[in-house]
Amino acid sequence: MFRTIRTIAAVALAACAIAAPSQAGPIIDWDPAYFYTNPGSGATPLSSPPGTQLFIVGTISAFGPPLQFLNANDPTKDYTFYLYGFTSLGTTPFPVPPFGTAYVATYDPGFIEIYEGTPRDAVFDINPPNGNVPSTFTNGTLILSGTVTSFYTQTNDFSTFQTGNAEGTITWTGGTLLSYVSQGGQPWPSLFTGGLSWQPGVMIEGYLFRHDGKIDLDCPTPARTSTWGKVKALYRQ
Image 1 (tube, one colour):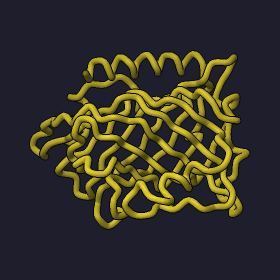
Image 2 (image 1 turned 120 degrees about the horizontal axis):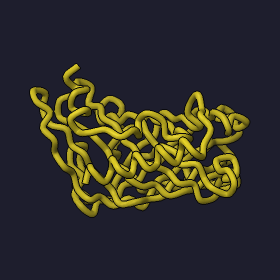
Image 3 (image 1 turned 90 degrees about the vertical axis):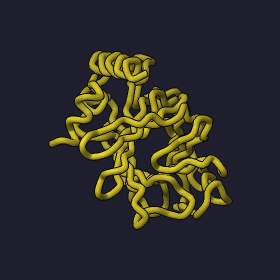
Image 4 (image 1 turned 180 degrees about the horizontal axis):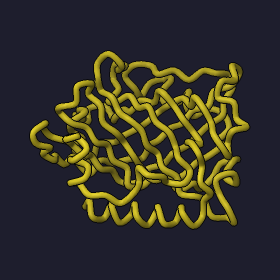
């Protein structure tokens, strides 16, 4: 499975190098986003049972080129996103001696939608789905949409602050601003990435993870080809 993931990452990186200009920073940045699952899934930060449905809602805090003309701090608008359609393929444990165990949950492809809405009304109400989640994150104008593949979450049972990461590759397919992330009719591959936390002090009741993340337009370093041995070595530094 991970050989396939590394191959996909290598192909995506090669495509980016050909098609997309280098960007100094993320095109979209956020803190926070929150992950949740279907009621009764039995999911925990260390286990995503096969068949679990994963959803993500978030509020955008900043835009970079080529979307720098959007103002995420405009008090009359909110910029939000919604990811859905992910079905868990299960969680695989990986021993990371002498620290403990890392847990990688992988998912079938899903979808991302990004909205510009008025008024500024997105709220992370408890125990989603509910009357405001995801509805207050999906109202307004759909400015970008796409598919998300190779999505995974990585957690562990040993980090002091209960942190991990999540990543997936985006292929843009629609939205009013699709031309800004495309060239010659071909969308630039993009990377959804960032850090997870499941520390109780930052969580909201009914959510699985808090996410501080970004979207990079040209699939930079985090998507490079690697091996699990190299990942484990990071924890030994």
